[in-house]
Image 1 (cartoon, rainbow, N blue to C red):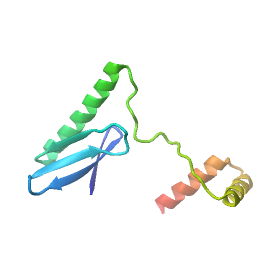
Image 2 (image 1 turned 90 degrees about the vertical axis):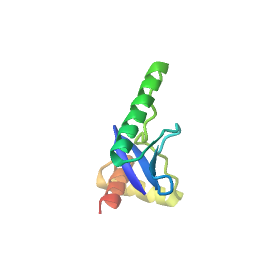
Image 3 (image 1 turned 45 degrees about the vertical axis):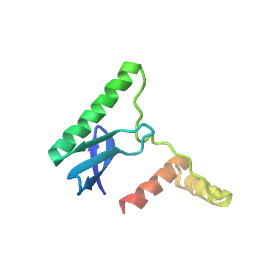
Length: 110
């Protein structure tokens, strides 16, 4: 599956060989934003247009547009692991949040 990005919004792209058309859908939103095109250039233009339409629609309604990621999420873990990670953060001289963020960053950046 291929991804495209526009103004911080990411979309998944699929190609329908039978129809000869690309279909895209913006990922990680409750709102549904889709677009399509017969060429890559047309698909990019449709993606940008769909995002711009979405932003204008939200603005007209006086609503903040939904963002794909807020930077916050809840992690549930075993209480013993929570205690150990908290102690490791203290020993490292950083907050639990910073310790976990650094560990996640290290894990994905290998």
